[in-house]
Image (cartoon, rainbow, N blue to C red; front, side, top):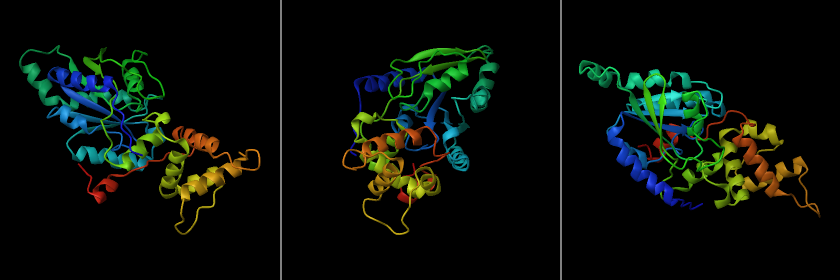
Length: 294
């Protein structure tokens, strides 16, 4: 899964973000709570520089609550603010304005000392495609201003929005980085739909996600698809599970062959939609143990 996906508009967005940064007080990064590290853009640390940071763990309704809390603590240890949200249903987004002001309390105090009491806090909102960034902004604004869709690459241009309580938001298009350094990152992004399905083989992806869930959420996986998970390691575990699930669903082609492509698509749709429950696919320890913690 050697994924390289860097459309021209993403390179342009990176340049625009760097140009806008001088006018920004706070950089707010939206990540998918199911994959909080894999859904981060490593370029953003370089882009943001020393600017104050906020991490928004979005889609908490799809992620394991205990793991979400662990990730929030992990980001706070880095000196960043952390906010847990379910933008689709409006949970947690009401705390954004106060959280932003708390991060910038010292700067706001300086403005007040200089008589700049009416100055708005300027926040750059960034994130890779399909982490719910536009939905988050729409919740903050209380109206549908930022176009939202359940597919990557919808927001194409940077836009400023005024929040009623003295905050200006700069919405930036979702950008990925030029090349994923490891297969694991590509797998997690593909699993949650952050990269387009048409650049990957759907059955291969489903097999890899099935293998991952056999470790992360074996009970939920077995219950949903009536699977018999092996006690010992087996070769081609993902495909074995995919065939089991397809047979149990009755997805058979002429001659009795199992329609594994159909099963793969349904499985990925159900996982992404939360049908299997609230599942987080990575922990901070995964990166620390692999020596990848930044």
